[in-house]
Amino acid sequence: PADLLRRRTDLLAAEARLAQAAARIGIEQADLRPSLTIPGTIGLGDGTLGGLFTNFLAGVGAALDLPLFDGGRRRAEVEAAQAEGRARLAEYRATFLDALGEVENALVAIEAYGQRNDDLAEAIEQSETALGQSDALYREGLASLFDVLDAQRHALERTCASLTPMVEDSTAAARVVRLLRDRGQTLATAESLTGGLLSGAVTSVPGSSAAYVGGLVTYATELKQRLLDVPAEVIASEGVVSAGCAVAMARGAASGTGADWALATTGVAGPDLQEGKPAGTVFVGLVGPGVETYRRLALDGDRQDVRAGTVVAALDMLGEVLLSANTPGS
Image 1: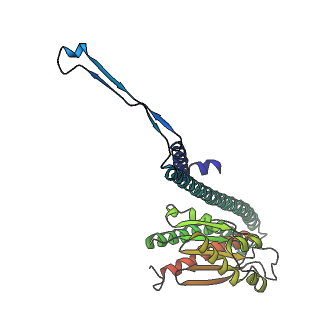
Image 2: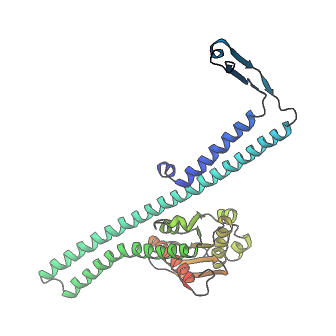
């Protein structure tokens, strides 16, 4: 993560602005102190060729600059420089935290994809082994052709499962980024069960920095309230796995980041129940210009399937709204 952060242009630019502000503080503070200058003149000759070698004229004086009458102005300039320095420091910290969050989210997404691919690779291997066994039994007359075909079907399904989520994620994310860039609009995310997968899918698209401002992963209920301003009464009455919570999360992300659009995900990845709701129960919240809506999902599969399906559904939801002829800015 440290190497990735050091290469980010936004962080380097913020660091340069902070250094410039710090230098200005030093210059303004130096201007408060008395300064001594020694002006002088040196002249040769009296205007004639002979006088060039016979006459040498020199004058030296001293000037002392004391902040007696403009001290107030100079102190005000120091205070202004210090205020700018504090603002640049806050900007740098905010940029650093945003960059760190994006890098960590991307690493989480990469790790999740890697784990999913490992699991699917193992499943593919098992299916191929089963296919080989079925084929051997068929050749020995101990299995029917239907058994072999069924084993082939399972192996093909496993192989397709390893490719489909990646293709769907990249296609849906690329479409959203393109539509946002065409409109000159931006997107923010707020994630719970997806844990950074949504932001990872968006930032995997080249040029996404022109449309994506950042996001928050608020897994804990407390963080949903503290960072996204999800009302306590919504959680008390509907729970965190609810339409109200999803919309409130999206609203908080849009408000906190200043993005035009915000997507939020909350739900049950499984395998256990949460708030009495089964695994695969997901709510996606969407807030944007003239839009405040949600979509309820009922997804099948294991944890990785539910989380990957949520990402695709959320991106499709935003893409559909952006493509709508009634969308502001379209």
